[in-house]
Image 1 (cartoon, rainbow, N blue to C red):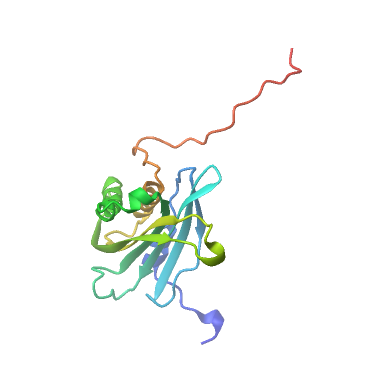
Image 2 (image 1 turned 180 degrees about the horizontal axis):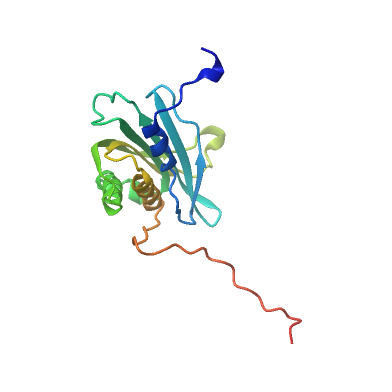
Length: 198
């Protein structure tokens, strides 16, 4: 088979891929298409995101869609979503023993809030502390939260799942989610009066 003879992906995968990127995104979130892992399933797609406040990057993440027409053990379907979120946290927050269950609830409550039907959810919450030594001894200690999760969507339309993942990233960044019926507004700098105006 030559490079130009790649098989056309199944219609179900193409339909789902079109919904992987949310249509409406909060102004704090920047999305980009990223390469998807090729060995986890016959077909895959991925989107990456960063959450910003002003010019500070507060969280980064990836949402990967896997599709296997035959399904895989543990998936409970043909699709699997894999999410990754990493966010800087204050040391007193990362030392809280309830951080793991709370961070996991951010995911499940976001999925439920968007009506995203799913099965077979699982994942891990990791706290990381980075300390500098040697010529990096003066670097500040940093603490991070990492959440890795996967679940099986029960529908081809993944827009609710993608919206829930965006909410998860905002929660990890310390930005509360918006109620479902409220739209985010971009703030513009105040206009200065023209000193030459009469």
